[in-house]
Amino acid sequence: LYRAKAEGRGTHRAFAAQAETEARQTRDIKFALNNDLDLGAFYLEYQPIVALATGHATSVEALVRWDHPQYGVLRPDLFIPEAEHSGAIIPIGRHVLAIACDFAATLPDEVSVAINLSAVQVHDAGLIETIANNLARNALAPGRIVFELTETAILNITPETVATLDGIKALGCRLSLDDFGSGFSSIATLYYVQFDRLKIDRTLIHDAMGDCRRRAILRNITHLAREIGMRVTGEGVESEQMKTALTDLGFDHGQGSLFSPALRDAALHDWLNYRTQALPDDTAA
Ligand code: C2E
Ligand code: MG
Ligand code: MG
Ligand code: MG
Image: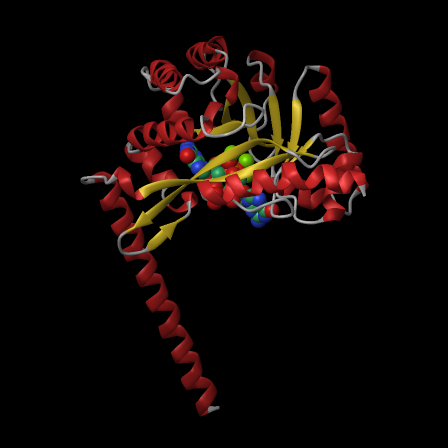
């Protein structure tokens, strides 16, 4: 009993210490985002988005990481919300756009780069010009860049939002509706903006695997998407079984650890080279 009590106290202390560490980390992250932001510490990893029928990547999604001086490499979920709140997402987003477009120029023409955009960026008056400048600097065909927007990024679909998204399409870039089904999916989003791609959220995919009612919903969403000219990507594909299920449900693309995690520049190039060289042999065998 004594020991259990002592252990209980120990566990309690450990929890308290951990909570304190996390609170300090959150404070430090906020501070670093809002004071002398060092953009050089932000870099991108790229995760292949694969055509289920061929196994080839048709695009790669740029995912930002922050190499924080104290805390090491931080995932976006830890700093993007605060960056959106404070406005730091504007310089970070410009930096992301610049490196992603530079990288796109190093990839084969048939591989596009998908870039995530926050609501704050969509409301930035300079967005279209910034995109155009990055395309021009790299002599990139605009179709090589896809912008991913979440439902929350366009939650209040105003005429201004529609105009900005139309402006992006007018440049020749493509639009993707990200994390579809995870938030407040609204018909208006699909109604007023012509998305080229639909990405179904990882949680929905996972929760549909053993459930035929949910699979029927997904099957009808892919059907709707096809009818209005959208390609459909399943997120978080982690097994062959999931890949097969998605193919049966009418998905045409998948992204997830089954194909590849997010990779740095050189590793992504290696992955693409390996895939394109290895596949003809595979099919011949
Ligand atoms: P997202 O756009 O939905 O990106 C996909 C996330 O799922 C990535 O997390 C990716 O690493 C993760 N993922 C991919 N495959 C699998 C899998 O098989 N299993 C599991 N469990 N997870 C998988 P990440 O890199 O942590 O990014 C999180 C979110 O942060 C992104 O979600 C995106 O909304 C946001 N984000 C990332 N980069 C940027 C950026 O440059 N700008 C903005 N505004 N947001 C960004
Ligand atoms: Mg995304
Ligand atoms: Mg997503
Ligand atoms: Mg997601």
